Image 1 (tube, rainbow, N blue to C red):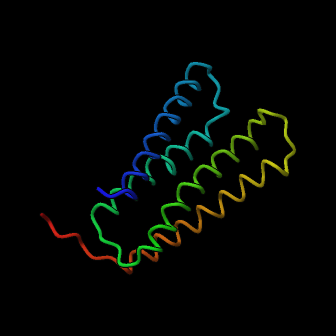
Image 2 (cartoon, helix red, strand yellow):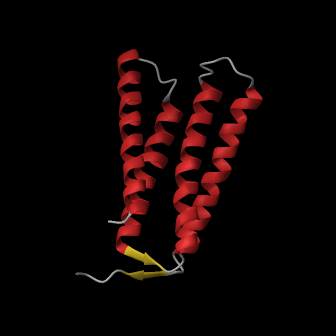
Length: 131
């Protein structure tokens, strides 16, 4: 397993813990205020980053630069989008809407770029040889 695979899987694990804690909090509190944030953390952060980590384990990407850009836009975009959702919906620090929207929209744009880069990588792959 190379560094890119492990990095995506470790961030996936971090998001899985955050998502599970949010789910437990919602169940205990009887409030679903975190529902959209919880869903995005689990789908983008846990499931998608994990799937991409496995993808890079199975396939050899011919363009290392695209794979590197994809990995970092995935991580940064997921953090930005979910953090922005939290700041925008929950308003924990009573910051201006413009500030929370920078994270929310900025993270969303970056994760969209990541999905496009992933799509592009699928045209530059070869199956890794089994050892």
